Image 1 (tube, rainbow, N blue to C red):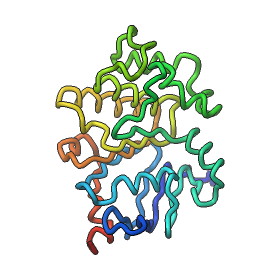
Image 2: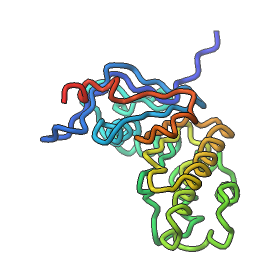
Image 3: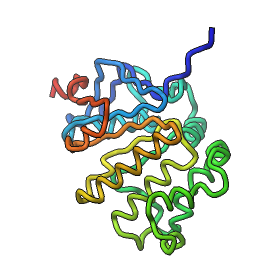
Image 4: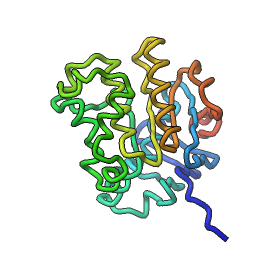
Length: 232
């Protein structure tokens, strides 16, 4: 019998609380699983634990209880350096504020994951950054400019290209469209979902904007599985 492919992302019975903080706590009463290539829209208002959940999923925060695993590898079983390497090789992350390195060029920002991971670089190939930026509609004249010189909409596309380069197993997007007007938001979503589908990356998209939920076959309200929200 052929062994089952590992889950792209698996979160089970996670618990976390910031010291001295009554809000933004997490206590999942269910297992949240993302299959390879699957997309999930995770919805919830501010303060319901969305960013905390993403930090646990990415192995940035250690859970007080429960488990979080990427491609079957539990984050808790890895030392700090091994977590960094596993994350660099298999996870793309789009931050709400993009977190581009402002002094680096657009191309160097997109190539950064490939410099941090030989596995990511091997999957990407030599011209992946240029190809992604072209598909994102970013003019070639921008590619060698510092990221700080770009508009918000352009920076968002660079952040998406950086997360997508090298076909990571999972892409996490944390409120990435909150600063965009409707036309830019729709074109960004086309880019993000299209590229994830093209290379088979699972997508965990987190937002409070219910208008985007119609773009996803699977939608989950975080407050419905977060006991800490109910308790608060």
